[in-house]
Length: 288
Length: 270
Image (cartoon, rainbow over all chains, first blue to last red; front, side):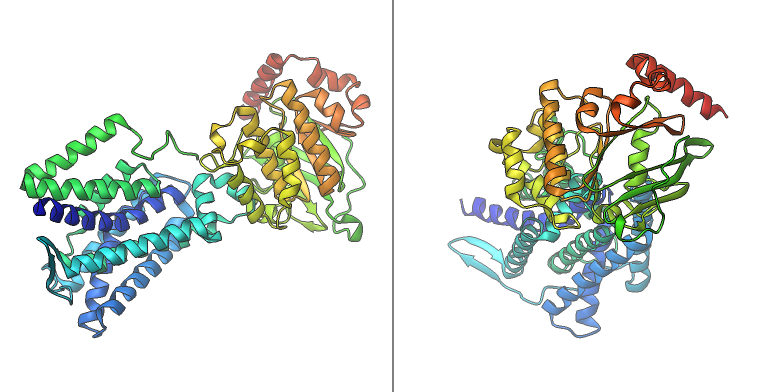
């Protein structure tokens, strides 16, 4: 019984991390119609920026995480403005650009930090044990911060004029423009917000797992899986899918182990997609 | 080719919220859609635009609203040249267009669609009470919280037009507002247009195939044909002209379609 509960907690904390990671991915797709292949790259930049801030600039960990988020957000903003913006209405070109961007990012990280995993660990050790339930303080803190940021993103998207504008852009760019909204003003901001979230996730999560310049592929793969499961472009769908993936992953790893665990995840995802081909909250087609 | 001699480029105080298209030409590569057309719409005036399929009626709206750049000539609004300015910039000046298809924010509720239209408009939008009256008249009042894509087609189309209205336009460009609507629903267009003219005082350009609607709403009419203005004036005069009947009314829709297609092919071949 305790094992079941502890595994559920692991699943929840995985889920909340995945949710923060995939929110940015689905945001970019929903608003710009762009699939950001560099998403995993920004996650790694977040991790390495926090690492550099702690080890080379001597910053305390929370400040390093905030710095990492700002750096990745700014980088995303600039990349959108300089590289992606003029090709946004095209679907293939931004894909090639972000793929190229990802190769540049991962190679640059290898050149600067070396191919070995960086020695970057969470500053708080120890774990909470209560009545047989077990969670490390690091995971608990990450869980709380991620949940807070997800709530903040929700408020930003659904309770502010900025969010109203972004959602209008995501729903129908043509009508939004007809009503006087300027795409050029919102696209770089949306992209920066999304990469900032990826960077924040990287800065928070890599010290609890591992920080290496080869993480990007699996991070991108996971974001893809979650966003497709949740329904492309849907924020709520991405969050729900993240929890499903987190819980399934935790239970299957604990009770099935290794490769069977990974297999179980894909089986669950496949079954859901057979029943709902557009994902959990996906809609048929997408307004142009 | 009759052109309006009343359009004065760079005019001053008399041009408040006046749309003046002056000798405007538009070509896509070698394909000329307009070779110099001129007309003027005063505030509170409703101008009908008709013409056979392929005459460039939608292109005309696309050029005015900034989705396309004119190849030459000027488009003046409120005394300034807006030709070639971007779509969103033109709409922030208060020139708001509707689309031929129903285009709304599909996933958003009726209420949110209208809220967005009000919130993002350059002029601050109209007051809710003002739309409320129209919403009730069109039977949309009880559907405020329904997602817009769950409404019947006619209601979605009306919602699209209401959004243009809610943006509090100074000039309203309607692209076939009645297309796809039942005749009962078409009277709603009349109500909306008259309401906009009376309460917003804006000029209104209506591109439409429904001649009854044009006769009811438009004291003045221009006929586009072969890249120019074939005729303009009061509907009863214009629609009685033999060249207009020849170009447009004498043909069934199918014939007009076929002719337009042939014309397009012929032009494209040049």
